Length: 224
Image (cartoon, one colour):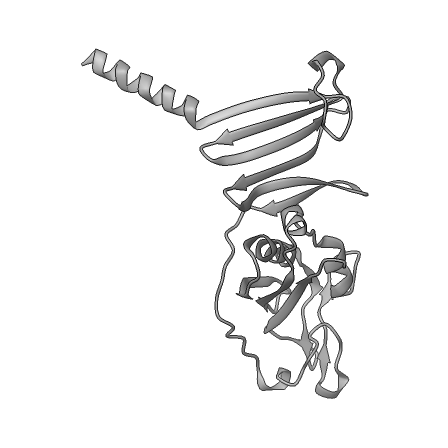
């Protein structure tokens, strides 16, 4: 019995060893063309394959900080990424599945004539919600937050991802879904951005908070 247990344990250890592999290479400068010994490196590039989920992490060895990290589950971005920006490293949360559904947006009669939910409309007593970010306008928030996936750029993938979400009376974006997708990469990036969207004040109708369903296209367009 003991020999059978040891054999099973050996198989489990062997399976784990095969399922996860890690490889680290060292470089002096970007781009990472020429490897150098670890004691002469400024950067490390570690690739971990965990049963088909591949994570690549770039570390600045002098600062002891992670500058880039991305995880792919097949062709889908996954988990928490770290990306470089002019403002320093930024976390990108891809730790969700893309929800798809048919467009079934419906609002109270008083809101049905509105064409822009993010602009005041005195005629119907509507006051737009206030975005809780440095960028107070939706277009500015999206412009700063949206990241065009590198793979999509390289392969000429572009288009308009159509989203729908509920903006609650508490000023929260909920039930975010793609109603018309373009490509998984663009769809997931569009949902990621709207998941970040927060409000310091909800929409108001005649001075009272109101829940509403918002349809929103996010455009990905490559320069000619």
